[in-house]
Image 1 (cartoon, rainbow, N blue to C red):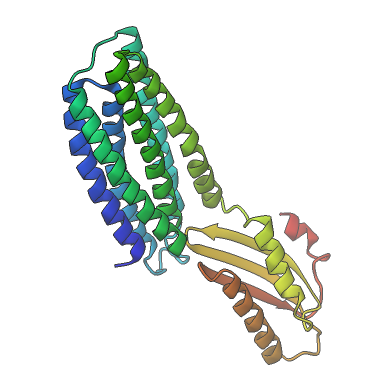
Image 2: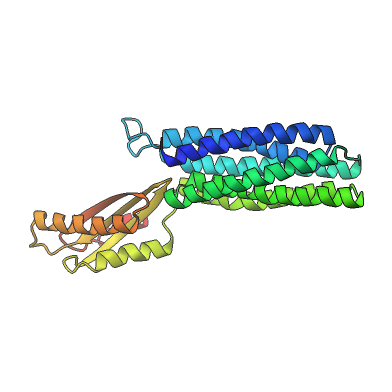
Length: 297
């Protein structure tokens, strides 16, 4: 099993444990903050299950129906995860405002504090593990999952602080106010996840620094006289690059092909943490101006 899939199994198991703990104590105590955290963990469980199946299908080889594979499932999963985070934040916001309008006292404070301490520690270990997997694999789904659980870690810490403050001061208004703060933070955290996923689904070009590096690699090869029509896109853990390279008309196809292979190898080394697919069209002359209309299209 790939490390990314193992990470989703671990996050799913942790989410299931936290749902049981938080939901039980949240219902008993009547805390909006704890119930909000329980609902968030339930959504974490659903998202982690989806991420597992997304990674399972994304790694399938191309076939007759999907010539470029199914790597777009990864950004799709990231967009869905960000959307779910936003929806859960709106639900938490509604519950918090309702408690301000219709206040009610909390109970079982000791149990609430205990479960949030356990939740904070468990989530902390999970975030550390997911960050390790994210850095090692550079997988978008795991990166989004790590960010998601990182927001949980912050919210768990804030809830723990609030429960302590309520227990010490007796001020019940702290709970819904904190719930509102958590909801806003969750939406703020979800926006970059959704944005990155959508850009990838729309085949946005690679960052400018990567494009500049690709051009440098091509231009350092003296046999290549010029290049044009450089196009790039990213799809999950895959990168697709195409470019027209201009060679002297007298060069043999064999020698031009060797140079193209050399350039491909350098580009793949630069993107060594990704699965890079490169198509170099070998031109015997510079036809960029002749086909300018095609480029604009």
